[in-house]
Length: 81
Image 1 (cartoon, rainbow, N blue to C red):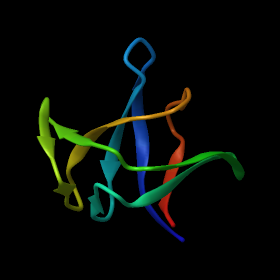
Image 2 (image 1 turned 180 degrees about the vertical axis):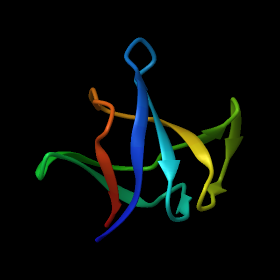
Image 3 (image 1 turned 30 degrees about the horizontal axis):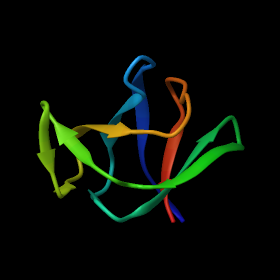
Image 4 (image 1 turned 90 degrees about the vertical axis):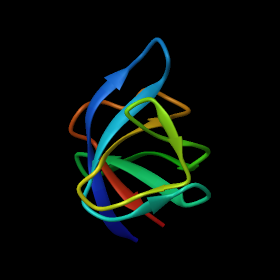
C-alpha cells in the first residue's frame, strides 16, 4: 500500500472526490481512503474524470474526479492497495 494522493474537495450532491495525484491511478485499481490514521473506506476505481472528460488512467501531478461510495472529507489521504 502506498500513498497516491490527497482529497482537495468533495462534492456531496454527486458523491465525487477531487484528488491531487502524487502517483499514477487507473480504472480497476483498488484504493483506500485514510484520515487521521483511521481507515475511512476502500473501493475499486470505477471511473476517472479530468476536466469532465472520462479517462482510463491519470498520471502523477494530475487532478482527477472520482465517484466515491461514501462522504470523503477534504485532506483525506488516498492509498493504492
